[in-house]
Every structure is written in structure tokens, then in C-alpha cells.
Image (cartoon, rainbow, N blue to C red; front, side, top):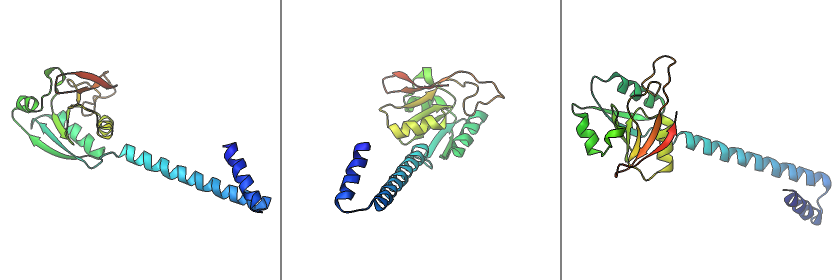
Length: 176
């Protein structure tokens, strides 16, 4: 940074710019740089936190499942649009989307080509959509208390969000 400052100072002196004018130019360049950095930071922050906000998530669920409806409301509040489909045979849905039995939960969602199984937090879905991992999707196996849609007072069970692929391989994506 000092080298750049000295280079700018030398450039301005060679052109007959006075010290006062030089300081004014340096201040102007500093302000422009600061403003540019702020614009870039804000743009990145907005895009990173609103990745695919408004994207439609198609949720397959049982008509009688209350926690599925809570998860749907949570995802809507997180910026996603929801298309809810009540089905009688969730096992057929899970087979169709190749969800390994060991990671299943109560509802299955499809978003932008990915499968979202169970009570996956919105930020993990957004991260997956942003990173475009080569997986079938994300899952929160079972129905852990404290996961989105499974809130029960202050109780919070530890759980993991995992990725899964079409060969049944799983990997931890995020832990809570």
C-alpha cells in the first residue's frame, strides 16, 4: 500500500501538483476506494444471503403432518416459495427420488434439481444452491427436536444435515 501511495505521490509531483492538491487527490482516491469496497461487500452479502430467495420448493407430505406445515411456514419466512403436495404414499415418493432409507424423514422437497429430505434449515438449502454440490440433496434424518418445524420449547437435540448421492453415500454438511 505504501508503494502505491509513493507512486501516486511521485506521479502528482512530476505533473506539478501542489501538496494541498496532492492531499485532496489522495483523499478523493481513498474515498472512491472505500465506497467501492462497501458496494462490493454489500452486494456480496445480499447475494450470499438471498441465494435463490423466491425459488419454488415443491414439498411432498402427508395431509395430516403438522411438523411438515411448520417447516413449510419456516421456509416461506426464509424467502422461499412453496408448492405443497399432499400424498398418501410417501414411501413411493422417497423411492422415486432415490432417498436412502437411513436418511428419511417425514416430508420430501424438491428445489432446483435437489432433494431436501426432512427438517433441513433454510441456510443449508441456500448454501447448497449457492455451492451447487454434486449430490442428490440434503437430509436431516428422523425428526430431531429443535430442527425447523420441530421446535418444542427450549429443548434442542443435536443433529446433522447430511448430503447424499445416487449411490447411497452420505457426508456431513453441517452440524447443530
